[in-house]
Length: 175
Image 1: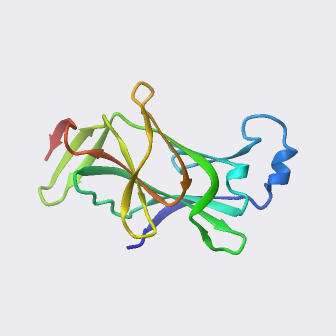
Image 2: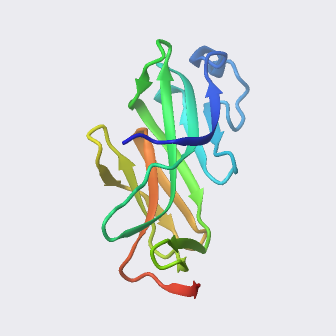
């Protein structure tokens, strides 16, 4: 199963090698790069030392279906890294930080019932699509007060943001 890329934002590291970061002024961003999703909702910080062999990153909205039993998926993104040889980099040398301030609700359309359900986001869960073609739940931190979901990982790829079906509130049904 492959992902279909709708749009993407690429950030090239070729001009920003570790040497150029070392000589940069000590201000926010001097120790790495920050990549934003096209809608600027999702922010990824990549420390220079985390990705010395990566020449470019791509952050993309994807349509890779995260059909996870017991979960409702509300967003899927891909964070891809490429080496100087153009090959995909799956694992980094250090951790990156992915932050996503979540909305209070999301809509899900059920085509079979021709109905839209509005769900409350109470306990988000993050999955990563592995090399083996399976989704695996990964560690994340959820700050309910600020509504910020944070993931720290050395592995990059396609991430699915989901909520468990049990215990979620259906706010309203639209037919």
